[in-house]
Amino acid sequence: MKMITAIIKPFKLDDVRDALEEVGVRGITVTEVKGFGRQKGHTELYRGAEYVVDFLPKLKIEIAAPSDQVEIIVETIVETASNNKVGDGKIFIYDLEKVIRIRTGETDQDAL
Image 1 (cartoon, rainbow, N blue to C red):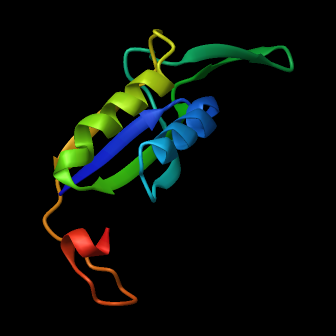
Image 2 (cartoon, one colour):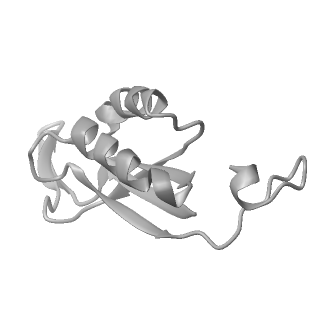
């Protein structure tokens, strides 16, 4: 089992969610986050004063998935979330040691 964490631009969420549903993903967790990478941030004007926005709004999507589905999930996120511009986001994949469904006590694959 793997945990897939993707950081994407907020306006791409609906497209990514719909595409993931089409490839069989049954559940995701979405968190509003802020951060920066190569994009660095930008300068904005508010009431005549300039200020620097260091941390840009992003969304973090987390998906627990069987190892054999990781490739299709990652391809789907890349295809749907990409604008071919700096700041499109990143995907992190790591091993998931154990999953337990609280309601039933099911574990691992059965709990997904």
